[in-house]
Length: 171
Image (tube, one colour):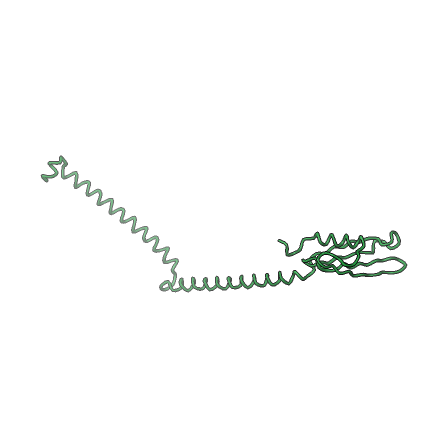
């Protein structure tokens, strides 16, 4: 106690302070134990099974499912790409121009139908109708948006309207 007397500290105060620190540490240890028990319960609920093997099996099963989904998505993308390639050869742009070919003699039963691919290849189908002579049908080939046969005004109108249409391949 000579040391404490030289510093001017009473030894009984030091013992009381140390006792309070020990009690504080004891309470802190109890709270840590309770927290550990809480986390252990959560872990046990998460690892239900004999030794966590069921969790491992579930995780591996999910990874297999993920791989299956990934391969299915790749396969679907390939199919969509192939269909997109095929669709460029299909008729995608259409226009119909109905008109009265003989003004008052046949009604609006005549028409020009234009059907084009994505590259503006296709045809113009014209049907000219009158009451007396019947109906005449003509087909004119269209290559890259142009006809190498003279088109009537109605056929040109149908062709221009079809070329203005948006292709299904356009984004």
